[in-house]
Image 1 (cartoon, one colour):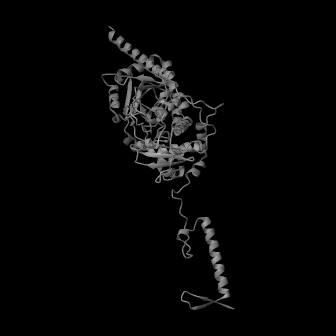
Image 2: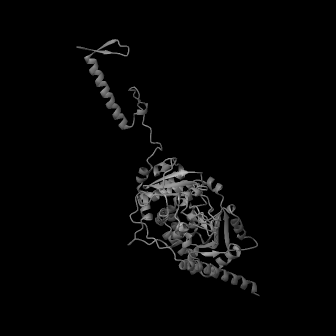
Image 3: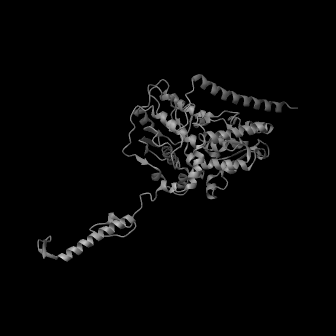
Length: 496
C-alpha cells in the first residue's frame, strides 16, 4: 500500500510505509538524544533550528558561577564566621549604648515623617537609591563613588538581608558615599522645608546626615584591608605578640598626611634632632605599598607601641577601629566628625583626648603621663580595645544596620517603589563579576546562614537631661586632661 502526499508544488509524491516508519523512528531518536544532551549540558537550543544539532558545551550563566553555592561549600569560612557572628550568649543581648544615637539621628523627621519629596531632594548628592521590597534589595545608581565604596556598602546590605531574612520592612533611601556631610542643619532653622534624609558614613554637630557603617567592614580591596571579622582576628593575634609593657614607649602613627592640613600639621610633631615629642610618625605611600605587595601595611604588625594616634583625614577616618583594636592607649586628636559608634566611647575610659590646636605638646604630655602611670594607661588601652572587639563586632554591626533601617522605615509616609531602571542585587549578581581581592573579600564576608538569635534589644531614646549629662561628662573629662597638661608644662617652665 502507498500513500500520496503533495509537496509545496502540488505534485503527487509517494513514500513507502517502511520509509515513513524509519523517518519516524529517526526523529524520535533525534529528539531523545537532544533532550539527553541538553540535560548533560552539551546542546545549545538557541542554535537548534530546522532540527540542526550543534554539539557544544552549554553557555554558563551570565556571571559564570554560583557564588552562594561556591562559598557554602567552603566549610572553613562557615566555621570562622559562626564564631564571629554567633557569640554564645545565655540570654538575648541589650544593644550597646551607642545604638541610642539612632533615635537622635532620626529625630529631625520624628514629627513630620519622611515624604517622597524629601527623598527626591536627597537624590541631588546621592550615589545610589536603595529600595528594599519583600526582603529583596534593588538599587538605582546615580554616579560612581570613590573606588568601590558604593559596591561594598551595597554588598553589606545584601548580607544584612541574609542575616535577618524577611525581618526588614519595605523602605527606600538615598546614600551619599562621599566623605563629608552635606545636610547643614542651619539651612533648615525656621524653615517650612524639612531636611532631606541622606545616609552616609559620618556626620558632625552642624549636620543632619544619617550615619551608617562604612564599606570597609566588608573589606577595602584597594588597600588590601580585609573584611572586619578577618582583620579583628588578625589584630587580636598581633596584640598577643608583644606584651604591653614590652611595647615601644612612644606614640605611633602611620598614614597619608596629604588628605587634610591637620595631618600635615601632625608631622611637625615627629622626633627630630632638636625636639623629642615622644612620637614616631611615618608616611604611608599607598602606591609604593601596592607595588611591594602591602608588606609594610599589615594591621596586625602595627600593635608594637604603647600609644597609637588617631587623627581624622578629609573627614572621619576608616583607620579608627583598627587603631583602637590594638590594646595600645589611643591618643585621639580632637575630632570634628563622628561615625556610628564613637559616640558611645568616653575619654579617659576608652581613649586619651589630644588637643587639635597644639598637637605636639599634647602628645608629649600624653606619652609622659602614660609612662608614669603605666597600669592606668594600659587599662585605658585595653578597655578601648575591648569596646571595639565586643561592641563593634560584625554581629553588632548588623544589629545596628537593622535597627537603623527599621526605625527609618517607620518614618516613611509613602509606599516604597522599585524604579523602572533599578536592578536587583544579590550575592550572585555582585560576587560573580568580581575579580581578585574584590571577589575574595566578598567571599570572606558573605553571610552563609541566618542569625540564630534576634537582633539585640534597643534602648529607649535619651531624655534631654540624660543626653546633656553624657555630653557634659565627656567635655569635663577632656577639660581635666587639658588642665593636667597645662600644669605639667607650667611646672617645667618654673623649674630653676
